[in-house]
Length: 179
Image (tube, rainbow, N blue to C red; front, top):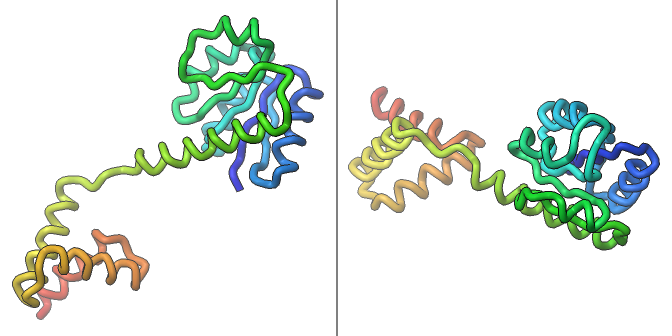
């Protein structure tokens, strides 16, 4: 279950949005009233989406967005207030908003967040790539495999043992030194 921050200046609005989102069963909500609370909660819980009003108790949503590097933001406000926002990366939904629109928007932001998270996964270092290449070369030399077969062998061994590919490559190299 994903966690979403719901941040509004007024408790009644925050509770209503929280009820709508949690009734769907796909998210759990953390309720905040200030930008400072949102900042702390987003860093502590690595929350992918913040749903908030145009302004919070201590700061405008647009200024808060600049501090949330890895969160998507959905601002719910009157159309005239949304038009004042000049940040293109902030998602906006004019009020009044239907339950269906709110749920669809949050689902879409969560999906986008998951895709961005996958794209931002750390890449292997040059040293790790070299180690994997050495293990593949050893398998190719000793077992007459093609590079593709050697790579698949390392992947399968990794999946079967629950180890990372780099760990499996190191084991192949270590076992060759022992034998």
